[in-house]
Length: 271
Length: 294
Image 1 (cartoon, one colour):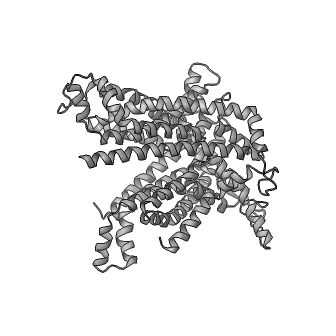
Image 2 (cartoon, chains in turn red, brown):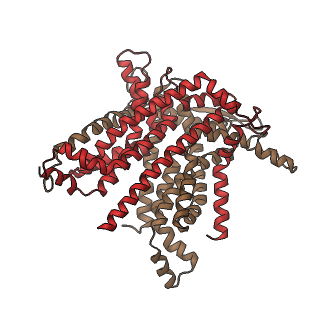
Image 3 (tube, helix red, strand yellow):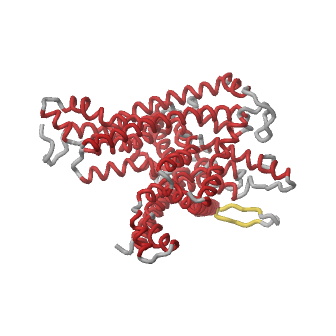
């Protein structure tokens, strides 16, 4: 790499990591200040774990993310299997468009549109508040599923379609062929898709904000409420923890993905 | 069971797709229809175009610095401001991101992977907190002004200016610009560049006549991926703009909080229509002028 290229990348990475570095450092600040570092301390972490509301929000976020991941992984995997074998061209085009919509549409429009529908249906049944855990779960599954499909579909396309057919010729039922032959082939895609769904759900603020009821607070919503007032380093401690958890998940998903492409290369070599 | 050669999709595969098809209709398509429905109805769900006309005609007074008042169309002004800030941020991302993507694509394979991970890591820090962190860095008592003060400069008032809002947008959406351009540049056939050089092209004209045109698909998807979230954001402007630069996302959020769902839907509807039109235009322009007419 040329020197100029090195300098340029260094500047860009400084820009990208400046706020993260500030966060990390000041989460260990003894004083309450977010700009003057006085002394090293973990007191904000201790305080964080004593904050009942934040812990409740953390629990809510994890429950929501886990449920949304389970449902969207199932829904998305089966959808990908179906899309991969679609013969009708217009049906395929329709599925691709519908899968693109939640990814291309601004989050605020996805959030508003779901909220309007939930509120309308709620009113129809005379409910005063129609937004709750269920509506949030639906919203999260809706924006997570396309990402699962996008991870699984390429794995299906890499797979030799003759494999499940051979299994069926040898007496497997279609369902048996799916579980014994197709599933093991596409598993890495399912795992990376699930991890992606989990991190997206964990991190989402905008769509949650519009579809959350008053009784169900997730972490991003709590953070939003907290930043309306003055923020203490406690929130930085929280951000640091979330950051490292997500980072670990992504590294795992990377390892799964690399392992898979390595295997694929080896198999190609053997042929 | 013979599935190859049959003209219909086998029943099992149709059944596998069915739940997602139903889900998409119920929770992707129908909600979008609800946006239009709310936009064109009043509180009793009777048809009206008032919400839409309100967007284009509502007026308010702005008090200038010299105390004079000017009458402006409130929401048209907000929309034009959002558009301006989003376009500037997108251009800044493009001019910062293209060289970065180019450097990455030309690096060793291992370095490429590391650099890509480094570009993506900030995306996994909650965006509310990232934005808030910038606020503490830039404020008058923040780190930057603290450092400037030590060498006898400053303070720079950044928070509450358009520059701060643009900086926030650029920071938050920069990876969305770099990654698509990088993936196109990394796949580019190096022989083409050699061929151009052999045929007498200088470095600059290789860039202008070969690399840039070939990387256009990446540039276009990068531009879309930055423009869409930055035009519809509603948090960055509140924090870094000190609430002075109300954007279209803030307008939607404000109407939602005030429980004016029909007007919120109307703003969302107009935003959606304009974005769709912009996408179509972008597609048309690239097809017509970048790939030469066909």
